[in-house]
Image (cartoon, rainbow, N blue to C red; front, side, top):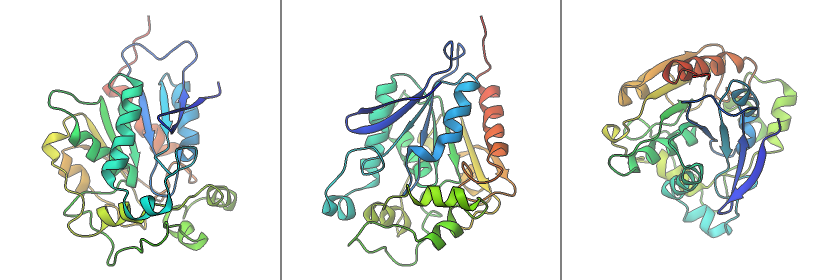
Length: 269
């Protein structure tokens, strides 16, 4: 079944509904992309999760493919991580029930901050951090700030090295055609001192951290982030940062499904 595509307050959403509906007792899943990407990077997961009985959404942050466009000055100099957190909050409010938020790379860091900002007494159903950025103090990863004159867009060589080291050439070329420039003000906020400060005690839902063995970016590639949040941990062996699209994406995806199934067993009437 093809996903339904629409916008909520200018934000692009794809919705994959299992045939016959999701299994009883299972929360919906919301997939959030990282820097320079969009909802498209979850194409495999958006196809397979509904097949396994999960009501699934993807979204695109502001100024990413399909979503509302900001003027250059605002996007490059005056956009913040909290703006992206608000985008995520807009979509979870649209979903209207506790969901499992899955964030990749920068999206994982945005999801962490979103969880911290939830009002006391409320929480989402779960948080999965996939090759995720980390908060202060160990999340500061750039030696010098990125220029805020223009959106940050990786070259083909940089995208190959950091995002798709283990992907076929056709996957890389397809991704390159869809990558967009990222807000340098957002990237500088979380990668320059003091970094993005998050109180782990306020992130109370069940949590899973997945790191990629061949990841060459600055995100944690060990149990550091999992320890910070007292989360479950899995090392995806033989795969790089863009593990949703790289060769071998099925293995970490299957692990996520097993984790979800254990947390939310299917109830079939």
